[in-house]
Image 1 (cartoon, each protein chain N blue to C red):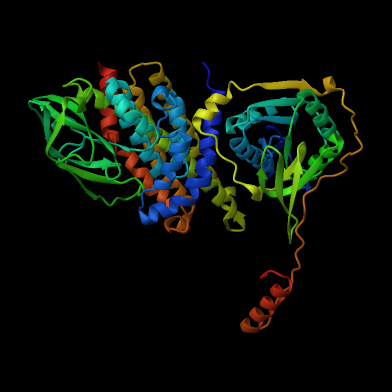
Image 2: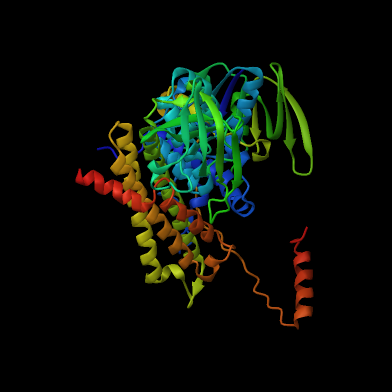
Length: 251
Length: 375
């Protein structure tokens, strides 16, 4: 089975600090692979362990993403393709991914995270499936893959929908689907020999959409109600508990 | 002079850091409180290849260098110093000497089991009346027709209660010492009760009694009479490991202190805005970085095959005193809360103290350094 796992290098959002003028400071923050993309790779590894095949990591990003891709090779992916561009964005990336996949050639299954942890648009997987004209099964919390088809248990909030697709198909996974493995030392050592092919975005001659532009990015100010309860203690406690219950804090 | 870790070293460090933060950190308090040996963690570490870091690859180890080794011990100790201690004794005092001095048969017999964590290693040298003065040990190994018979009692054997392989230092002749490969199931071996300690509660120590323990020549490690030299060679690597352990402990102490000092408000300001606290943090950071460099430098010398007696002693001497002070400062910065078990810094302080004592007290380290300077 040929599996392609789409992975994105992002800033570690847990390290972002908000300035006094309510702007997030994004420069100088350490980078990492988006969390759900590691879930995507872990699922691919489980499918490969059962059915055999190869796993290719596909990334659109800046050249320094190579370092983080090696972590994914250490986890067990076989090879990687990095499409380098200085300005990846949500509308351009799916086109570049499509062109890169056409360059890679044969594939059965594409696995993406449900969204990236930075911008969380959740669009890339479905957009890519649309461009490739293949089926898509999103928000998978469990998969069962054979040589002929893949069954996904899809998380729809209150319900789980179980759907099946033949190949080629694209799935997106949530973080509940698995616990990404840590590579052992031997795997880290072996990853040095696994190939990473670098292609400049311009070489791919992809259709570039470029319809999206970011107008603003600000911190969120917590709205405080500033309600003071001044009754005697017992009454005040009862009132507060009622109020919190009304707000749904206990459910 | 290249002072950056290699890509592989960075990847390994990051992996161990993630493992430590995910698995060791949440369990460290439980380990300290219950004094349980963290078997599930040791089992996970075996899967990650952390129990055979320096064992050659043909025996199932990672065959890695000393710098990488010290990064691993540092990252483990950064969340659980007990795990750092267990791992350092296993790797430096057992895996390393068996890899270096073992016969082909001995290496085949023990190394892959050590690498996979099937057996844990321990090192039995100290006795009731022979600690710093190791040449004063009374455990004897008398030559017999079939091999040797050992008699004596060892104390303070780290990993003793769990070990499947115990490297044991015994006197084979007047002023002549040898190392034997013993297993706890051998007739005549009694593994004693655990000692209760101030800290490092996950790492268990005990006494081991040897009464007419008969072993064959196959159980002798290296040449007869070379035991002290083998022990000191292993202990030198162990000292680099302890220095790395100290760097890990101090790193966590500093991290906790920075967080607390930014959260705790007194006189309408966070503690971190007071110069008294800033001075402490600055000193902790500077001394931590100095200890780090001493440790990596000693590790680098070890990889080059240089004589590391002085470098290893200096790294351990400085790093251990540094980490005890860092842990003390962390408790002080936390104030009253630092003295309670609500915060982890009191454990760091208790864990840190043994680093100035085991594998050669700080006083002995000074003797070693002076001896090297004056020869």
